[in-house]
Image 1 (cartoon, rainbow over the protein chains, first blue to last red):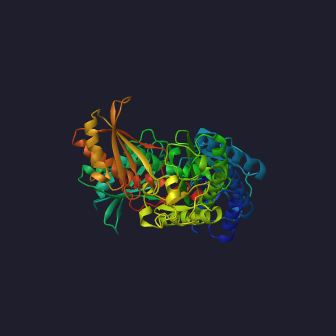
Image 2 (tube, rainbow over the protein chains, first blue to last red):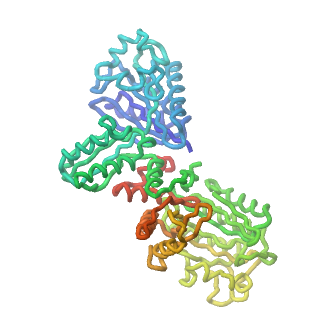
Image 3 (cartoon, rainbow over the protein chains, first blue to last red):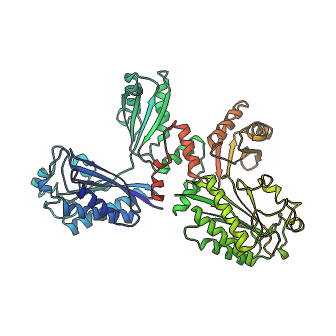
Length: 298
Length: 298
């Protein structure tokens, strides 16, 4: 079974009824499972996480965006977070049996549909970007460039939307795209020396010469009196969990420090654990189709 | 989602149409997935493997047994394997989210239904045994005790069925029960010395002081020029894969031998790989409900 995750952000974090109606619109598509929804009153936005087949995800995201456009007036919106549209950022993420290309395809189809049918300007980002300079979300929407700035600049070629009209209505603009699954992964060390933790985190992270798809920081955990290496694994296919874990272990050893335990925060695709088992058990010929539960999902 | 596996054996291994009809009867229950079916002409029997929810498995197995009773006449059956009934042995195996107690329950319900509604004598075995001496399959049906011997002895108290009449009809008798999932797991060593392999296999297997739920033999693989430790893991919850793998590694080291790779033959429950990842990554707090695919199956 093909599974994609979609994590749309909506510019409403105070009115529960509005968020509830958007969730209802999304889950009205058969086979959609809402995994999580978080409302943040300060930022006045909500983040909804759902999974489904690619086709269902496209339709569900469209219904969510349509409902948000009907209920949220960006002219009246106030909040801390960069404000851009009633439906702000909508990423599609491959989870199981789906390629990035398929996610790019459905995200662009959604962009086209939102632009044409709802009349909302759409910017494609991430792997779905149609202009090179729109790959990074922060280069489209940031603290210094929000809906007001976009309204002023949308007539320029630089800010011409990938889909939809070159003008702003009450729903603002939307940023639609695709990205890799992000695993939040922490390793807790048998030390309370934060300086050592910082050196280990530095050895791990991409920008300081570590692993390409790892972002790492060190924290002191007061309740445990331990140092934690807190990581984001931004592409678990290319930089698998076990490699990050073993590198933390390796770098810890030079300080005579061992690992207390590690933890996955939130959800994780099955494939990440399959890869871990394959590595440690030297299961070189193993295929995910050998997992019984996969058969039930076919 | 709750998943059980059921592996019924039928006494027909020559007539494809009969086996096809039995498979059709089984898969007529919604949600049943046929994983495998094997016909053996010499033994004149077939083994069908399917998975489903516990309720569906009960109904599917019943329909298979009913169809087999209608199509197979044990009075005319010939074959090498111990012959006992049209539907011979029917084990239920917990795979995911299901306890052994639930498998015992559905197997006994099936036994009762088969006994009462189809008039077939039923013996419960394995974890479902209702008499202590019927725990082992071989103590019920073996080379020296087949359908003919049962027919002679069924009037004795020792051979009184757990369900159904104390007499044999054309469908013979059935043995219904529950057992743990069996993982076929091999580790290939970087040696061609079979004597060393035999010592390692001996160190692994339960009966020689090894791990409780491991059966192990050593083979020489001519095509690879390597020795293989071939194992059956009969309870992967209590004796997990990683422990068997690491013990092979440990015992190999004293002979200066390393592991080339390992392999899982056939299918494996996801939980076995989750446990492997938990061990090696020291993921002590991890729960299977954190796996994204599990959410899709809820």
